[in-house]
Image 1 (tube, rainbow over the protein chains, first blue to last red):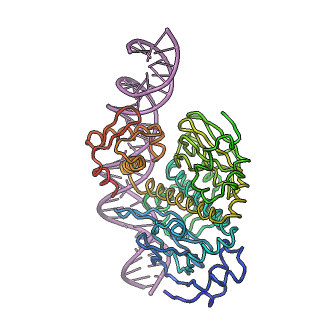
Image 2: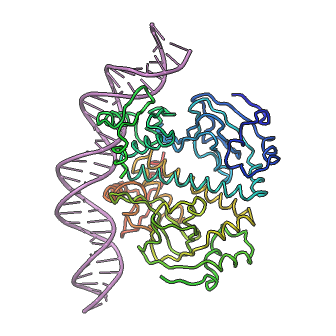
Image 3: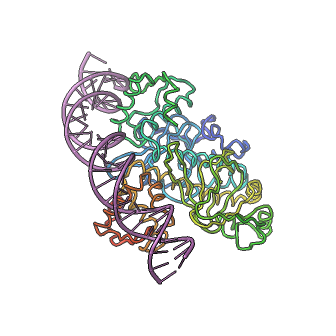
Length: 229
Length: 229
DNA sequence: CGCGCTATTGAATTGTTTCAATTTAGGTGG
DNA sequence: CCACCTAAATTGAAACAATTCAATAGCGCG
């Protein structure tokens, strides 16, 4: 785990983060002065629900999964975070401990920004707050879509939706998952065995082609989309 | 459905809403000038996913359910809103149409505040933004808890959690649900039949006592809490 | 190239849903 | 205030989907 003062790495941290686009260079530098960068290896824990922090953790490179784990060891993934997105944002405004565990899905560089600095920046520049509110809105929307998925729709629908979303995100019918199938299952609230069976079924129907452990090629997008209705 | 200019009803709208406590009287009056109050009867629809609006809908009196409905007619309740809480807040900052349907669970008075006024107030008074962010944080936390519930925990656990939360909210072991059992089932992602069976089981075990259609008395809180772990 | 971790497959079991029938609650009108 | 009536809730039995446990297969990292 490497640590450095952020002004050493010009292209890092807030230069990547849409939320800070309203800041002047001086303001950006101000925030950077008190922030640090850390690198996590694949599988490494970034924080747990036991961690208490009032900082903002920005993903600079790599991918992070946020998840909850039950006492029986069952995991529910809440969100996968990509570069430019941030975590720990809830404790920033709610004074509560971390609500989830965070793990690096691959080698990941995180920039840790002082929470106090953020609040200061908001007071000086309310447009940042509105930008934050936009991000939060989208997160609520996404979370509520997830509730809808898990609560209303059956497993095949959830799988189809996830595959199609991933394809949309990569803008290709050829998908390399950034997470394991086990994680995939934990995202949609099922077991890896069930996911495995359903994916095989999709392949048998000629809707997708599976190859390797993390590759899915969409062959019949229309049939997958039909499941969503 | 009654409509009136809000300055007619002094104790309504923003006087109830924690979010606006940082506003001066003049600022409050300013917002009230462009807002209206509407009253909805039990079961009445307040808006649907087809409604597009950039206003903030504040619950003044009564209760509101926010829900999503699948093409097969299955309903998933996302949230129950109490006086002082607001809806439509997502479209306010994300420019998207309403993400859910909203129904009055009882006679409900709603105050509709102009979205533009809110944004203006935020620019003039960033503390409002931080207050908004706090509320949003809590909403994300709640939504993510719901994902955890539905994704990881079995139905008995979800029921126990809901009962205990309601008891906590009313600060009594004697609960009168503000929603039907059918809605209860839709909140936790199951059917009314399954809920009915599980509640009967809880009663048989001596954990709760059911009476009427909406009354639950907690007899053995410890046993219910054990289910949560 | 081999080992370990991840994924797949099978079979039995469990939990939940579905559909249908019945009961109960509680509002309405006499 | 009681009887009625409708909507809501309960119960039963059968069908189904998903999980669990266990055994096997295979990818991909070193």
